[in-house]
Every structure is written in C-alpha cells, then in structure tokens.
Image 1 (cartoon, rainbow, N blue to C red):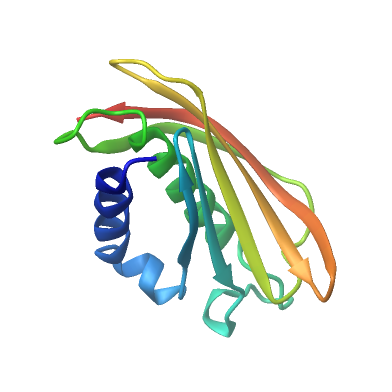
Image 2 (cartoon, rainbow, N blue to C red):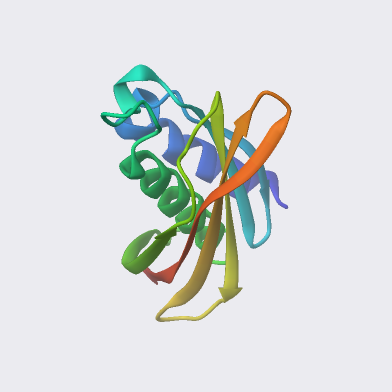
Length: 137
C-alpha cells in the first residue's frame, strides 16, 4: 500500500469527530482492506451495558468506506450509498475490531463488506456483519 493512500486515509480518519468520540483508531490499511479498533466506552453502551448497535454500525461503515477508498484515484472521496447490518450477538467486552473489505471495486459503486468482532478477555466473537455499496465522489 502506498504511503500516499495511508496518509490520505489517516488524515481523513483524524477529521471524523465521531471516531474521535469513540476513541477509535486505525489498526491497518492495505489495498481493499481497512481494520479499525474502538474500546466499548460507557458513552457507547445501551441500557443493558452492551456496546450499542450504533457503535458497531459506525465502526463497520467507516472501515468499509475506507477500504473502498483504497481502490480509488487520488482526489476522490467516498460516501455510503447503502449498507445493511446483521447483528449476530451482543457487543460485550473491552473493544471492537471492524474489518472492512472491498468485494468488487467499480467506477460508480464499490461493493463492500465489514465484520465487527468484540474482544472480551482473550475471547473474540463476531457481533455484526455488514454489506453495502460506497459511491465515489
């Protein structure tokens, strides 16, 4: 992966106030894949103490969007055209990892997926899967 795209994604990610609110960070950037990590903070929990679905969605959507961006030309950006989430299990634990991947790159739409995994102690459990499309702008 070129350092230009890594810098572009890192700079863009740093400007997202929601990701800062969640203390999210970039774990890795490779062509067609971006991995993000966020702790399950008290401000992102629902009434039973699990990570809120909005946290899983935001992290997965962001990882998938940046994965799409790795396939686009310099000067382009990406926005979500549509994305679906299936919640598999409660988001319990210390933190979430979202892995966004490109399924099929395209000029008008980039088809993407994301898996969100919760880590509790030494155990990992997938809590959400997502699929959607990103629109280059």
